Length: 233
Length: 156
Image (cartoon, rainbow over all chains, first blue to last red; front, side, top):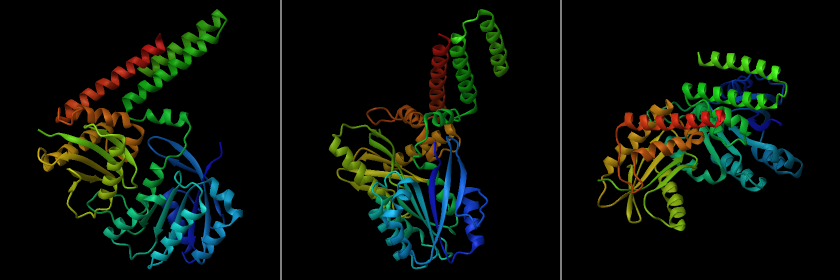
């Protein structure tokens, strides 16, 4: 299966070291600024483990970039994207956010299974109440604005890079059943041990039934008993 | 005696993670409540009151990290502060079961979250159990039975 694709958009004016910092903070990934694709980024949570490629792009004028992105040539790219992260520095954030809304509404046929994050990379952040109001209006577009430089408050809300990670975590990645099944064994260590023991036993039982030769079957049985008893001890 | 009408769990992104109805609402009413209550609660600023009136009842909510726990209660019978306490109990119990519960735990183990809730609130919306230890004990006993069933299935 191909990796998922995430588009990360930086303003041209954002310094290289800030771009590197952004990537390494959110994705724990080393970024070579000459590369426009960061491949095989591993996203690991308590419940699943996936890989995606990050397509890194930059813009000079956001409206201009949006026009190019809306063109027919970019349709394939739009279709394969699982999510987009827009980084912007503009203190006057409204025009950029309107433009992002426009991109989502007008260029994606179906955006419900994609995530969109707008990240304000400016130390003069949007104040909490305004941010809530703003994000409430953007729920329909699956878009959430995050202040990169927000400090965690007493509300236990995740902010900044942690919130970006959280949005990616809860995105409904179409994981295969294997990933989900194995991930469910993480609930606690006890059920994890028992889960893997049962899985092993089930596999052993299936294999045993396929062995026709009696001696071979006996040998297999003995080795399995040994392995399983090791697991119990 | 508390008689909760419904309990909802909604994320900051407006996605419903858990719903339990304790009163018979028809499908139209349910979708209206889901849509309007969630929108109302999500649009409220952080320092606003956690209790609001909606239609013929009250809505009590509390935000924990990225999740809003919302309960619909009777105007006359129920106590809002007690409802807030029940919500808090539910969160604490999940916290103990999952170990620092997060949205992802509820997404991937929603049946466990429902089990915990069902041990605390009966199908008519009244509270049946407030002891966290007892709720955890029952849910873990259910887990053990489930594991034994799996083991029996494999060994049979």
